[in-house]
Length: 89
Figure (cartoon, rainbow, N blue to C red):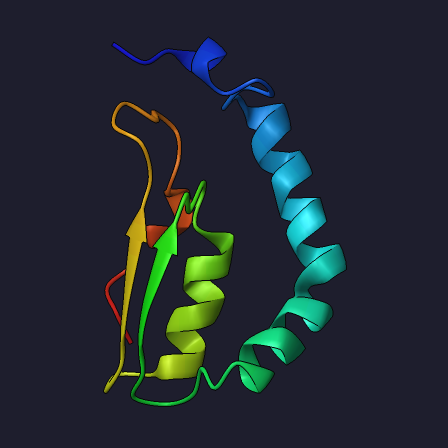
């Protein structure tokens, strides 16, 4: 069974905060990359290794209610996906 140690940096609150900061720092660059990659309204996107879901939420905002984002994370990643407990747009 996977444990917190399966991910080198852990899945505790401090790591979630670090990932949140990293997401905010790189977000403008990533949004530009996704736009250039053609991710727009109505697209279907697969986020593999989605972690806590920061990118998946951004992607859901981009594709809107006519699109779809599927976010995958390893089984047993307790504490991950706190942002994805919201219904789709």
